[in-house]
Length: 598
Image 1 (cartoon, rainbow, N blue to C red):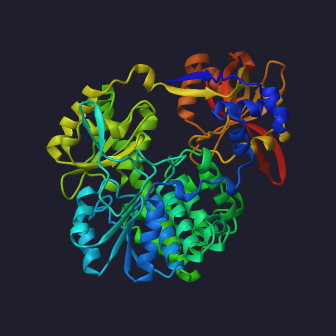
Image 2 (image 1 turned 120 degrees about the vertical axis):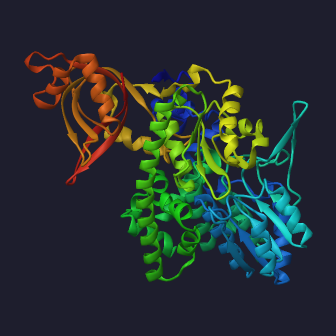
């Protein structure tokens, strides 16, 4: 079930439109994204790299630069320890590229998902020490590695943490006492006493800002100059790639990073990224957040899930066209394999939920012992979409049980796990996603505790469909669609605008696609003006809805002779849509993309 709501935020849309030379409709959409002040509207529409925040605003960043400059001058061995997902791989590459540009003696290690698990562990610290490492710098992890950093300190190594995850805490007498690890520098904008203006950045952006500051200091220039250099622009591509891949909100600084990074990717100088585009059939001139999030990015994640993320890191580091092509091809093949395994896992999870009464729980805890542990997060995401509930998918690991969680807006996953943290051998994450490890006998206890503590209401489980503007399709034109491009890039935190119209009559239709999963229709408004409309959603669900409401005969006639002809009842629906341009054999035409119906 979904609940439709029209955004009712008020502002002087006519005035904003005149001031920024946009239509009142666009002004209203921007206001719906909580962009209110003049300076913020200007940044939203016209923001450039010059509007990015200074690296030094992040707590301990200048201290980290100072340490790294000293280590580079002393020719000390530095090891980067990253993570095996998109953000971790991109962060590792950014640090490696930046430190190499500064002449550092540097190598990298990415944990193996099965053997090492997430983040720092004693094994990785010992390995670094045995290899003669003087300084460990983490990226996209480290903020929760309190004991491991103590071990590194005891061995005489220097540790710099760069991370973006929540800082662990103990709750004592209703107050939070944060546990920041005792590293030589801790660069994480989520720290309580960090004054960075926009803490919702990914690990790769933290690494990017650190490298801008480091190179600037070494070259005796400013960070803005480094940002515009060849190295700085390449690093920005990877900061943007990770921001999309780690599903950060495309607001404020993230919006500028992604907008600029995508533009740079069209002509990327990185051999590996270019090869990955070729392997996946990506048109470099049309890269959108969707391309990174659902085509390129999953190839990086797949290697960390089913093999080792070192392959993805090597892809970005190689300067050989032939080697890049081989690595990119391998990553693409691995991702294809991952898709099949994910589909099986989702089917198994749905069967378990529906057959065992788990669907009555407010927080879903699904134990799939046979599923590859690396797929837990993806499966959890799919199950969350289906049931609109917080989901934890747990799998059998080499030691005990491992799992990943994906949440809904009303359920802070990290805080809820903290309430029963004594059950875990390890856990971490943030509001909407988390990872955990626990003993097998604790699985039913976790399920019970999460549901006992849960204060979610029925309203929280209803999908909220936010309509930006109730707008007749007759308003849509090519120039309006061009204007909507000013709102790009679209993604988490800046969704594609949604419009709505009542009393849309479905005149005729056909089902397209190899899997017959696309509906293409001719529809009419109340003035009998006709439009092309396309639907990429759940066709089976759409057909069931129409048949139940208007009868099987009307549904059949929709695809044969047209709805309402030969005695069938007319199919008339309210729809939520966004306008698009259909390009076919060089001819462009307007089409509406239906998102929801009722």
